[in-house]
Amino acid sequence: MGVLDGKTVLVTGGGNGIGRECALLAAREGANVLVNDLGGSVAGGDEGSAGPAETVAKEIRAAGGKAAFNSDSVTDYDAVAAMVEQAKKDFGGLHAVINPAGILRDGMFHKMSFEDWKAVIDVHLHGAFNVCRATIEHFREQQSGSYVLFTSTSGLIGNIGQANYAAAKLGVMGLSRIIAMEGAAKNVRSNIIAPFAWTRMIATIPIKDEASAKRVERMKNAMRADQVAQLAVALCADNAETNGQIFAVRGNEVFLFNQPRPIRGMQRTDGWSPETLLNHGLPALKADYEDLGATGSVFTWEPV
Image 1 (cartoon, rainbow, N blue to C red):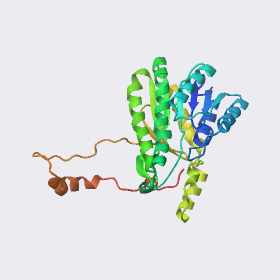
Image 2: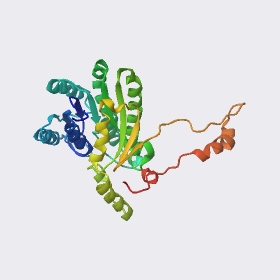
Image 3: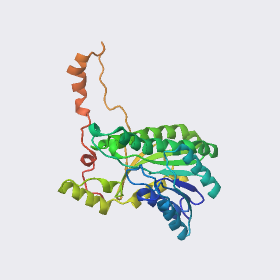
Image 4: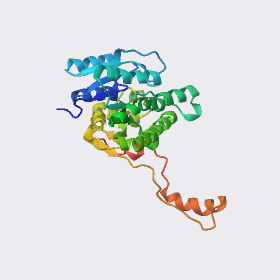
């Protein structure tokens, strides 16, 4: 007996990395899996290939599972809607979406082209909208459904050179929160994961010095895509009873992130002016400012 027996799961980006591991594990846990992957490069923009998605689907079937494949882009709403119809036709329904599909086009913001900005937003944020919008009415009607969307510490904390990626991934956080709130009455859940895992996307990070070389080697050895898949699949299960939350997975560590809430307030009975804010209000709040450290300044210890 698996935790997803009798369920059907759509996994985007399922041909490589985290998506591949999610598709394989979902199948081992009893799900019918529709493996979607454009089969393009890490940077996107090419024609892609059905090969990666088809290979994973074949691997699932060879192991005794049930799977179909699809090689359309999550940036095309009509194509995503067709994926939903494919899942219904091939497996009789759809119960969960795992959406790690993504690309990277890193660069300093002052040098970032509009094309690189738009391409990343289209895949990550518009792609998340498409897979959720194309399925939400079906989930609400059957009063059951789970979204596992993917954010990043690049958005939650910040990383230099990833303004487009960070903006998209923080947008996914807001999208998931509202879907969770609106879907709760219909038993439709949405949660997000910020993954730490060695994938072909991470392999594009330039190695500039000995410290970055050590960091990359550590990721290769201690932070794997299959470890992220464990939580993604668990969140699809009916008995997860988890909604609207933000998680991170780092090796064998699972973290629950806080969400923005007021941490301190200042009041002035006669109101504020720019001068009083500069002299009193902002200095009083300064002790509680967050610093500008990147992800590595928050996760300072070796992964478990």
